[in-house]
Image (tube, rainbow, N blue to C red; front, side, top):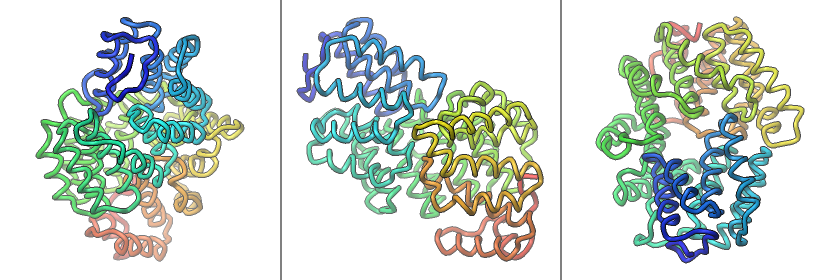
Length: 441
């Protein structure tokens, strides 16, 4: 059986292929329930290697250690089935991710897409891996290589444009990124990734009113039945924070970011938003408690350093000593391993996580030293420029609390020169030589 682009799909009939294609289309937009769709494909054709492959990718690309056993079962089932060369390449990449070999998996998917450039699953999985390892060039170029083989009439063309838009933005090419992302959303208004790529452009350029309008004007596209909506609402909240409209940002935490946060990716957004709100002087009350509750099953995971940082925020703000020790112990185990997360943790994750703890323990000067050592290489543990900006904001706050006024003001001046944004109130206070009202006390 061949799929829409003429690639062989082993062990699949027309019914199974229909479910498989639907699952892939849902995943491209982050809508509805692609897991249920791919499970229907598996039920129709238990011997469909590509269905097991897609099921595994769906559970791997959430960076949730609790989902890895599900992915491993799908991988093991697929390994026992007849497969073609393209499918075996997918399986090699999945096996590498299961072993925390993210860079090697990305290379396998890179070679796969060179050979089969219409494989949208390989392109999307590779793009996500590039994001998790902080490789902005491959975020752009992996998709740029494939685009000449695609045309607007092909299913999923919008997703190629959206992924390319995000890669362009992370590479600092804001004008073409915005144009590419807007074109993707025009083709498919439900493409939440393309929607978010343009939001990143507005954030990096300080065009916050335009960013809010961009997101609000297409809520009907990216909000309903969209499991990427929490992150997009996070972007809206960050736009409001950049405009000093903290009440609106807090309202979005209460209604859109905090309560629905269930996946690890959602929890990262919840922690990051509360931390930024507190940097801005907002009393968030007991909101950290529910976020910390949901982080608890992941405290000892130690599989992705970017997650450890955000879990630590919730645990220090709720004084959960046992959970704090679990995160630190998990990072020690990670450092002793021979895999990519050891590098993520060694290069950036351990220092940033310990800096958050140092701030909570009233040691801002220690936090300053930890953050200054790693902020210029923070991309090595993944995330976007917008997400990693939290490190710079925290450094400014820590410098101010440590009484390092000249450094704090220099960092504010640096920020103002690099970003076309007004100084929000707490940054303006530091720039003027005063402490802001509340810097994560």
